[in-house]
Length: 120
Image (cartoon, rainbow, N blue to C red; front, top):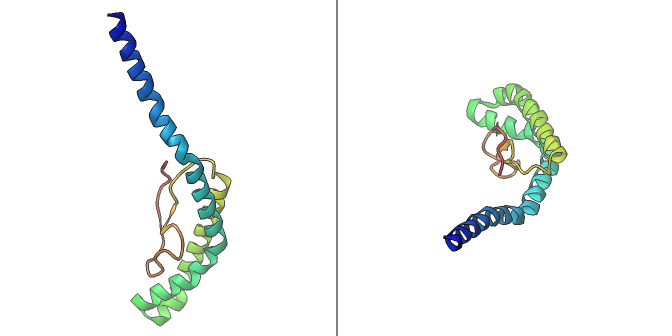
């Protein structure tokens, strides 16, 4: 009886520590990726303006792209830059990127959207 309780206790102990060790091994990679993403988004946020102007111009026409695309791109530029600054400030907490696509150059022909923060 004591032997089965001891082996069961050992099994629970091992099951408790192994997932934690696996998550701890990925932690430096995750925070490094978040810091790099934050720096890239904070620096390249201004590129959202011509990107959005091009996207809106292709779908709605050149005049719409030059006016509404400019202001929409300005909002996206501020949003991407602030999300990058937030990622830099909180890089020790591994979360998914808020802007989608994560980097501006990932899918240049798609308008930026924003998602909620989720733990990795």
